[in-house]
Image 1 (cartoon, rainbow, N blue to C red):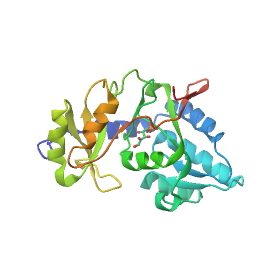
Image 2: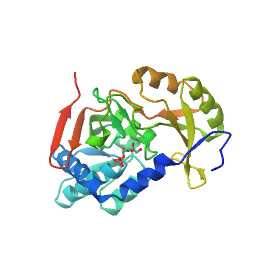
Image 3: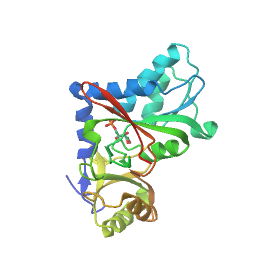
Length: 250
Ligand code: 5RP
């Protein structure tokens, strides 16, 4: 695979996830978590709709609540989610119309013991973070494979950058101690819903994710960073045989 802009390429995150999506045996814990989260949704609420294979189960459940008569409005975090929610008949508004959101349900790639997260495996991190930040309650749905003791243990850190400056952004990110790989879709750079690129950065286990997030966000060309610090309020963890709800440690 040729390098892009002289940067190493990372096709695994996106394409490996597509393969994982097909594995049905992985679905039960995700479904359990999504079903449990539906219990938190009330009539009349504005609901942030996450992106990814776990959020998809929640969206299907929310569509069922709408069919059963609940009056809800959804705020999608990606074009894929918007399309799916529309097809399932969930009334939608955008973030500007919503202003504030009552509750958001979304997935995550990694969650540490303080409920800090890595997100962006599906490339929707910027809209996901904005919707989460506009929400009164943020509920994160995961299976146990997403729980880690330190962020960066099992996943690369996705960072959305302007294509115009991605080489410069990558070089500044490298100075923070990572290998910055450009995410591909097929043979060409992956394009986010905002028209940007993703750099999947290999930091290894991260000691101080809050500090790292601040350093990343001031790099020229960086649009958003996949570190979500202090954002998750509740974690719904699906296992094969049960589901657990945990609240963020004080
Ligand atoms: C998309 C995300 C997803 O929430 C995250 O990748 C988890 O996805 P999945 O539920 O498919 O494992 O951040 O940008």
